[in-house]
Length: 209
Image (cartoon, rainbow, N blue to C red; front, side, top):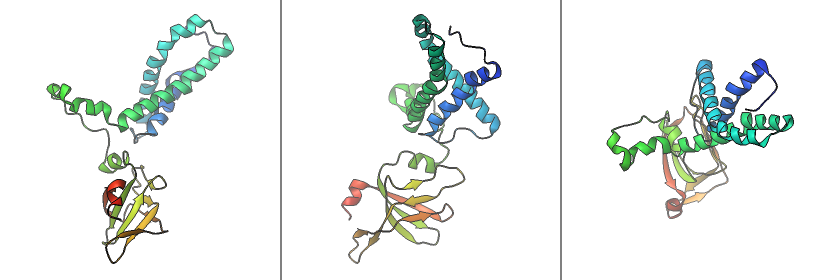
């Protein structure tokens, strides 16, 4: 085992809370919020820290055999607290975003289990915009007004539960012949104004323009 200086409560914090927090931040890069409330977050952090410990423990025999001095042991501790958890979080977030874990039980080899897992994604908004590539959209407001625009890398879709607003980087206008022409305008729409959003893949939309 690594012989690190006794850190007391700070050591407990570094071992059981901080790695989980760092892992959670990695998950949040690719997925939606997975817990609410301070107590839920503490439980999530501790659980993710335990997962991080399971991953990092695979390296302990190698590190122990290397006979590291104190400075290198401290660097190893930093890797355990920050680097390994963040990489673990990125992997978990990617699996969640791609629906790999839950989708596994929907595939033919596992259908015999009869398991029908509930989606971890709370809303259709989060599911759609969590995996949307470059697309064109037709946004209909509650008063019936319609806007057509390009939803690309310079656009923004809120992933905050209390805010479902959108910023569309470029608007299009339809001419007298029904052809959609690009403009220099962009569009912000607040969550309370949106009625529906229709989508066209960029390749399909090119045929309409």
